[in-house]
Length: 169
Image 1 (cartoon, rainbow, N blue to C red):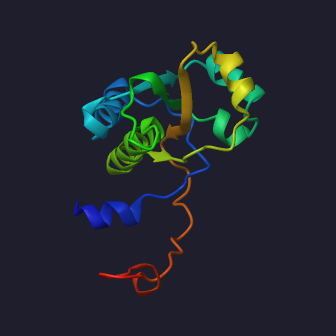
Image 2 (tube, helix red, strand yellow):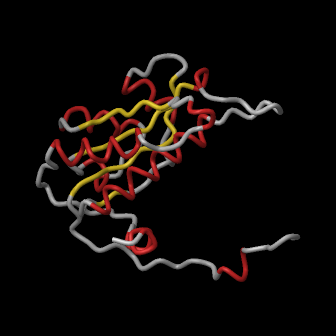
């Protein structure tokens, strides 16, 4: 599949079949995240995979949407901020690196026929406690993943001529 076709096909899926996702497919998605670029190749990410019903239920403390918690797989992209590259002005790139890894994974999942939905609207303190995350590890985002029951909404994007600036603003 051409990359632009894949990017156009990726959608936020909020309804999943209860069918388990084969480990081989989950591992391919994780490999796509591992292969993502990172600032100065620091690779500050960790991926937490939840497949057991009890593990997924622990997320309800921080994000209680049933459609998400009922997905057969949930992948959390976490970063180790101390390991990430920091720009001269103090901006830590862990969050950027984690976002790139998440994007690689959601695109790979789409290519494999799986649905995902990027989740960032969680209660961080409750999530940290529920999953017993160690100090220095932060959750960038997570995604439910499974075989989609729906196609997802059509993309509504701003035209290029409204967002592209050439040579000057």
